[in-house]
Amino acid sequence: MFSLSPIKLMVIAAVVMLLMGPDKLPDVAHKLGASWRAIKNLQERVETEVREAIPNLPSTGDIARIARSPVNLLNQLADRVDAKESAAAEIATPPEEPAQPAAPLATTRQPTTTPSSRSEDHAPPDPSLN
Image (cartoon, rainbow, N blue to C red; front, side):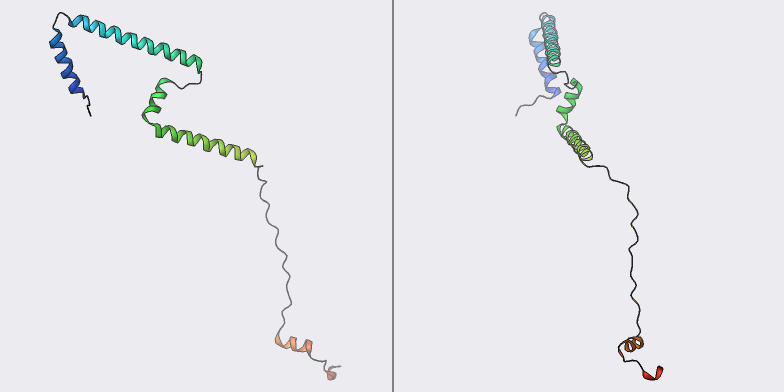
């Protein structure tokens, strides 16, 4: 499409200055300055009215930064949500009690039997030992 680079704007301004001539140039510059001043005053009035209506509105610089980098804004909002969710999770869960050392498990030792003692347990007593 049609794009205006700074060089093209300067060429257009030079052509306009040549066409107007030196006698009309001061009047046109004065009108341009007055129009620019009126636009700035309108911007200030609108901004003060909006700030009165919405007191928590970010500053103009912050809004411009947001408009230039919407991804950065989304990242900041996601971080805020994560922080709120983690804070809510900490409030919802009771604090953990300090960990108690685990009591040693009671181990039951089974008597070790040797093959010879096992056979004696099941064998009839020897009458000669009496």
